[in-house]
Image 1 (cartoon, helix red, strand yellow):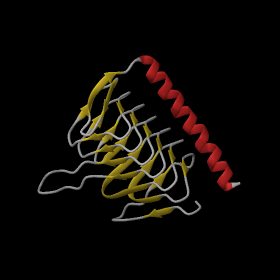
Image 2: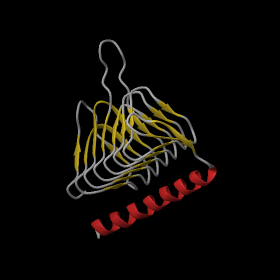
Image 3: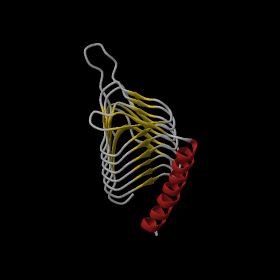
Length: 181
């Protein structure tokens, strides 16, 4: 992979499905797993040095995003960062020790902190900050700093989000072909 850092650390080597797209400039370190047809866009950092990072099938992590995990401390277990299948992570987001459910969306420039959960089909609006331990229920949209419930989403939003996932899978494959071609 052109200008991509894949770094083994603490006995863990990142595992990347061959069908995934990893853009130039990415840094992927330690206990990281990236699933089929996922896309990690330009200049993202995924640092699984103190816990695990898991990226599900068909999920995308857009340009400039930073993903880390929470370490064990003082007898308390740390939390991995889990991004389930078909999730969209917007440009320049920051995720730390959290879980992003299937088909959920994290808006660009958002921050999701330790112990937070976005359930399936949940949304965190652009520029929002989800403070530690918060949970966004399915079909809820939260926004603001700190984030709070703004509105309920509908099945039309779910359908549109799934179309966006399909677009990113297709676009990732186009970029992958263009770089390797």
